[in-house]
Image (cartoon, rainbow, N blue to C red; front, side, top):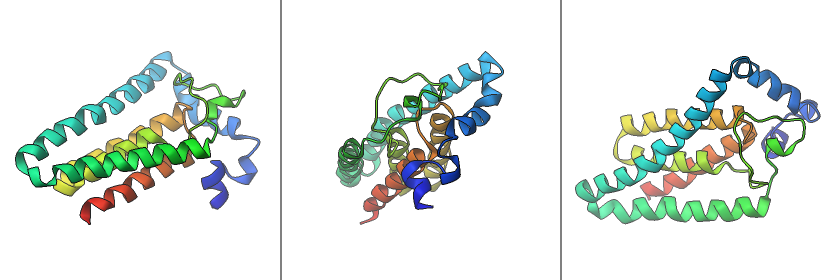
Length: 177
């Protein structure tokens, strides 16, 4: 299991992740509109959180001004720490493998683990959960979809998205301290 987390694939898949990826994306590759849907979903899910977090902060400012700094500092500091850790780890992305033909275009090299989009979405979902269970759970569903889109898109390995999700949840727990 540790190998799956660290390397993003089972030992028996190590040389065949490209085959696994091709199977995972075959349904999308059969129709250009499906690929476009995946690209739009990636864009939409990313922007939901980019817009949702500032809106949440304004709501917190109005309803719970005493908790605003905590809701800025916990996600902000954890984002900086995660960025430093991921820069230090510098794991390759799937599309850096010449056999992987991603569905989402990205040119960044390395810095794949943990996935920062999924991390950001999950720490924002935790912030929402701190105030509203329905809002937080809805955000988590969108967060999981975001991770799936980024894996199917070839931007991250499954371990990257899972690590981003878990790191975001762990960071978000500091809200309750």
